[in-house]
Image 1 (cartoon, one colour):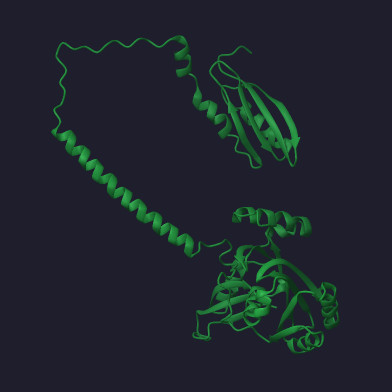
Image 2 (image 1 turned 90 degrees about the vertical axis):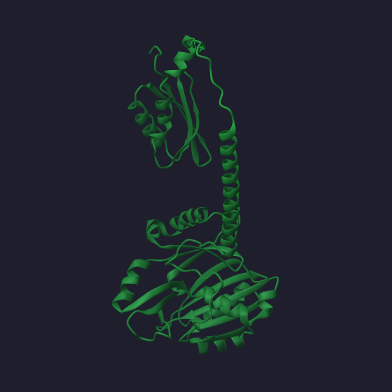
Length: 371
C-alpha cells in the first residue's frame, strides 16, 4: 500500500508537490554496526547481508543509507524503482519531491508523544501498519534513551490481532513499551493493545508535518552533509582566503626586493666548468624504462584485485604483491603483464589464502637481463 501525499498548499493543480510514503511491507531495514562509519562501507555490508538472505534479486533493490535515532541504518526498497515512481507522478501531473519510508515517521511521532519511552534505559516501540485487505506488518524496535538498538519486522497473518498479542508476549513485559498503529484497522488494533496493557495510540493516517530531523529519502539515497559539515567548509574557506592573501603579500615583497637588488655580472673571461659524463651505473639507472615499471601495476586494473607492493631496481627482476578475491583474477593480472613490454617470464610465485582473501606475488624478468 503506497501512500501519495500532495502538498496541501498546491492542492490538485498541475505540478503539485507529492510525497510517496513506503509501508513496512515493502522494506527491509538493517541497523549497521557502529564500526562501519563510511557510508560506502555500510552500503557494501548491507548488500552482502541482503544477498545472503534474499539472493541475487536483492542486488537490484534501491538502498537508502541514512543516520537517525542515534543509529546508522540501511533501508532496502524491495522491488522498488525511484525513476519509475517519478514517471508515475508525472503521469498524474504531479512533481515527486520525496520517497520516504513510513516507519521512521511513526517512531518520531511515538517518541514525541511518549516521554517515558524516550527516557527509558530499556524501551520497546511497536509500530503496526495495517492494510486494506486485512494484512498487517509489525515493526519492533528496541531503544536505549531514544537511541535505536535493534529492529525486527513480522508479517502478521489473519486474524492478525492474535499474532500481535503473541509477538508482544514473546518479547516480554520488562521494558517500557509503547505502540503506534497506522491504517484502516487502527481501531481494532488499539483495543487489542490497550487490553494487553500496552500504551498505544494511532490513527488512519499520519500527519504530513511529522518528520525526523534527518528524514530518509530514496530520491537522495546517500547521506547529505549536515550543518556541522557546512560550517567546517565555511571555516576552511575563510582560512584559505586568509592564507592566499598572506601569500600574495609575501610574493609582492619578494618581487620588490629583487627589483632593487644589484644583479651579479659574470666576467667575460668566465667559463662554465665542464660536466663529467655519468658513470655506467648512473647511465643505466637514467635510461631504465621506469615508466613501464609503474605501468606494470597500473594497467591490470581488475576489479577484486588490489596491489600492495611494487619492488624493482635497474638490473633486477620485477616483484609485485597484492590481494585478490579469486585465483582467476591473479591469472588475469599475470596474463596482462606478459603482454606488456619489456617484461618476460612472468610467473605466479606465491598464492596463499588468508581469511577471505588470497595473497599473491608475481615476478617478471626485467629488461637487459639474460633469459
